[in-house]
Image (cartoon, rainbow, N blue to C red; front, side, top):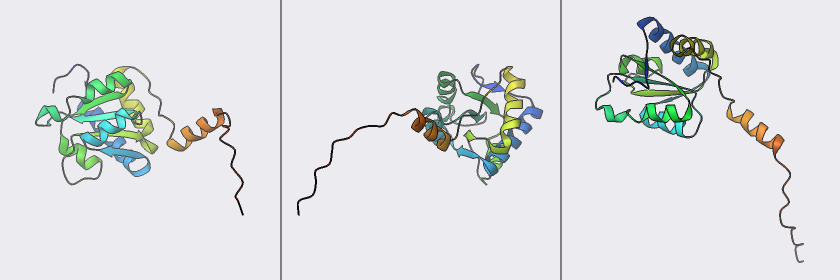
Length: 151
């Protein structure tokens, strides 16, 4: 899948990326499969996406690079969907994954992305932190006054 939007990595960096995914699976949150990865990207929850190069037909994952580019999400390609599946704990191949929370894998993810693209990435806040942040900035709303019950 020779696409200029996907950062293909060396075997060494590929192994680091797969290890980061294993750690993220154990201590963070990872979405498995092209459909789940796409939903995570569209909802703005993913911050790191990995796609397998050997996916057939290519149309299964061909939309993911464009979505990642629009959302400014880091994306890399690994050579094997079987290796990607094993990294997320599946016994079957996996076309794509999206990391929502890296957990202990954050350090390795940042290292892989910075070596490949030369840019730093920030892990997004988790959902609880997002909700807390929204509530701090939210003004109290005034609803309709309730009518007293008739007795």
